[in-house]
Image (cartoon, rainbow, N blue to C red):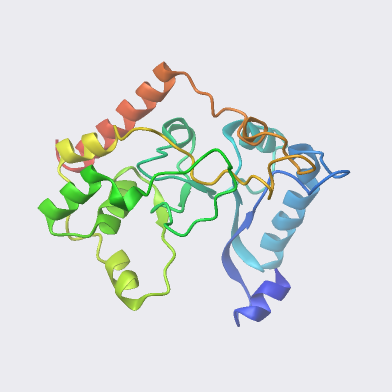
Length: 239
């Protein structure tokens, strides 16, 4: 934290995440439990004023519950995960209002899955149609969709034009029927597999299911979570 602060010319950060629920590759393959000491160090950083809030990144609901079972002094302020219309994270969102990671499904993403070629979100016909009807860009529609779901979206861009687009999300909205349609986009595909990075032979997690303990939610649970999110949006938009 102190090194990071010196790099960005500030004495403190607003939020700092515990990025992975593991310490590293074998023989350090112990999972969430061994992160307890790391979380306590982050709590100490809050007490020292090095950071205002601490959170987690890429943690499943199960792993978050384990963290909370430690009775931490400071609970996670955010959970930064991949979320976009092609990977809604309905159950995750219903469990904890987290920060969305890669809300636009980056076109130049690194794909570690040899068997998977994720779809390009911004080329989806429905998103392009809604964008055209609203006179907005496809990226703006995807970001506004995330905001309407109650998420904090984190788009990354070095283009001044794109940054300006990202800011212009609050003086318009997506009609409820279009929003509902966007919430039904299929297939649901995780675009970040982390194969060869944190998932795979010799990595902290052998399979994605090991990283995302509760990803295999039942269709009924997903449906209930989606209905709850839609109801919240309708209330926010005035019915």
